[in-house]
Length: 104
Image (cartoon, rainbow, N blue to C red; front, top):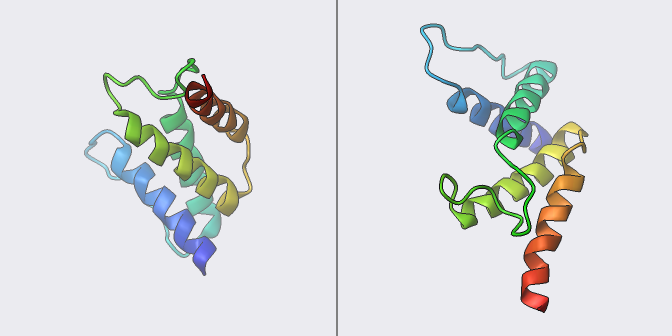
């Protein structure tokens, strides 16, 4: 059931992150396929705001650096619960960029 909890968390982020509209999106929390689709849509939307850069963070004008860390953690949870690893290369590269600053 823990996997279901992770998928539900990501799906809820998807619903809360969408623009307000007169008709709220509906997700059946008992339907794993719907939850996975909602999580996929949410992660795609979230990652559309990231442009790879030497700091490995989102644009800090809009997203403070510590929120980048939370987003990277969310990516690992997303990959674990959905099996979709398409963003892990981006996340790994961003984390390596951040750690390289400490080495220099």
